[in-house]
Length: 199
Image (cartoon, rainbow, N blue to C red; front, side, top):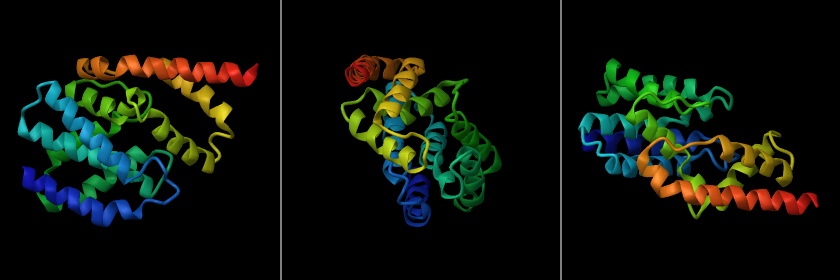
């Protein structure tokens, strides 16, 4: 199964990710690799050992934002369509594709994971909220959203971030332990920035 994933990963890097717009400063190959790495880490910490489960989780993490190739809105559905088009050649069957698509779709907001693998991919997707590279990564998202006219300035963006950080939750015990404390610190820092800029 490691060989299958290696082939899928290399194919995605060569044929799929280069088709993403350069204007996607956040939703790009770097983000996909980060989500993949974090999904593997969290799965290990949560004791996931079934090889097929791990394979499907890794594929879903890799493919979850590929739909941005064709659409910004509703990209999750497009990601699923792309997975169904591309993955059968690697021996991924319909049952596995259904599972992969369910994992992809649970990353759509708002998130309601129903099992451990779904919790893991949700946490992996937003892992950066509680990491030391939070401000660097959030700035990439700000630039992407600003380019699309979805935010207008840093003040507007920080207000959105405060709201998002307040409603966001990590689902796995592993990520609550690893990321929650720093995430709350980031929330406090942005609230102070907003206070300073409005006074």
